Image 1 (cartoon, helix red, strand yellow):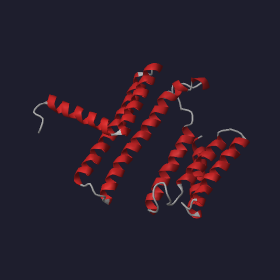
Image 2 (cartoon, one colour; image 1 turned 90 degrees about the vertical axis):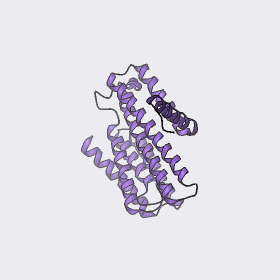
Image 3 (cartoon, one colour; image 1 turned 180 degrees about the vertical axis):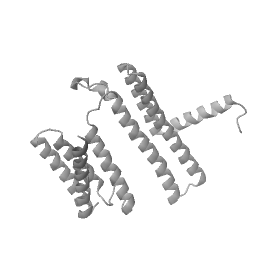
Image 4 (cartoon, helix red, strand yellow; image 1 turned 45 degrees about the vertical axis):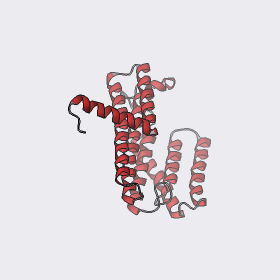
Length: 232
């Protein structure tokens, strides 16, 4: 029945949240993560702006998960049989949660890293450039390009096959970042070897072709190198 007043509407909303938390494990994880972030913010006595940003990020993640739960419930109401469009609907809703969670994690790093890593002579990162901006930015650019290229070529699945190899691109992006970070020749060679092994494993498991692996390796290396040359 339709709520007759705002109190009943409020009760319906609260019941919906409680049902979602009870039935969805991931939503419980998000609430626990939000609680942990809130306690860290209170412990480190962050500024008002930083506190607002952290609370906003946590709310956006929980909001996205609630919408995802509502969409999944609606799809299950419409059909209990497998349908390609039903799968796509659920996948897209889950993707919205993933994107929001990544954004919240980045924001949490920007706000809290200056408080968590004080042993490394860091300062609150909203008043200065945070450590690792260039390698993290380069990695995000590589991931975005991989997503766009996989969507363009429309081959394989997100984590299995397709052009280019995302594992190779990410592995070589990390390797190039380590080389530019001044970690020394030995560490750089070890990370490069690890990137090669990751790429080779995609061939041995017959998940990617040689062309896809090479393209991913070149993409990750070239984009990361370009970002370092332009912005470091």
